[in-house]
Length: 367
Image 1 (cartoon, one colour):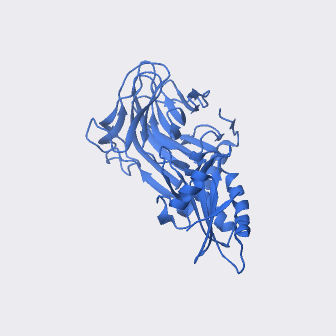
Image 2 (cartoon, helix red, strand yellow):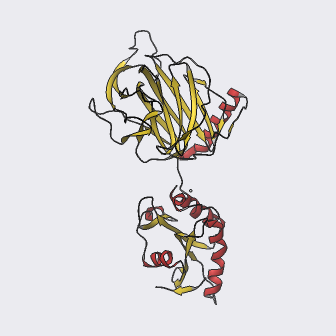
Image 3 (cartoon, helix red, strand yellow):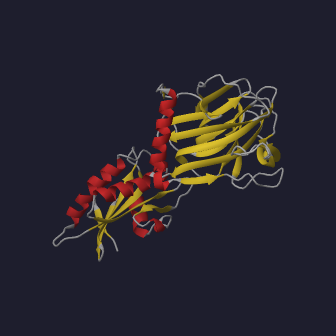
């Protein structure tokens, strides 16, 4: 390559010893989250009849969009009262889906922002209020869009089910027959670690560990079906912040190559044509616009070389699985006396090849 001189169906149900497996995975998740764990409590506070900030209604399947809004309801405390005299309920804001369109395969969702979660433990309380066709409520997780997500939900017909949507096609449901009473609050807990998914319902494991590779990270949301009118409360999540592929590439390459003084990866965020810095040794630089050299490298699909006070700089295109240039890597290397341009570029090429083996398509850099 010439050089120019310049100034990212349920595969299996793991029948692995029920409760023991669940506890083991929970401990592993806690260990995995460790010091880098973060916590988010989702606030449902907003004027009655409105939506809290950050939430967006989404329709999966057919029928009319859902009608989501804040209402007030009697909710039991998260911690069991210490005395019989303590209040058993408090009246406060909850989120409600109140549209009663009975269309089959209609799934009104309410999705939170753009935050993506990978390894996490999410807790949600829900109440089935009414529904002639369906009485159903649940949690959507690792959501890519309205056609691709996981869901676990409770049904008034007496079951807890897990299923997934892939390209708009719903998988066969998995889960036990469990009484899910109407008019009472229930709790769902979903724990994800890698491709393993564990589910609790009202404090007990709902099913054996599930394993699936369809969705490894994504957004969080609320779920109903058809004419189910349902209330939701107390959603919170403990999670490890998602590391994008670009961030992983920079970190692992720098760790494996101590002679590298710096490495930056540039790419385009979904929906944008602008080339920006996706990851670098210095995190504070993330999001900055690419310079002239990086822009030329991508446009011309060529390697650029320069030499400065900080070391030799090789700016190289990154390609997807089809060989199309979709990003740029900028390497800064220690120099030595008599170092030649061709030799320096030769040191970089194996690193680029290793990085490209982990890139499938352009969006994966930011996921």
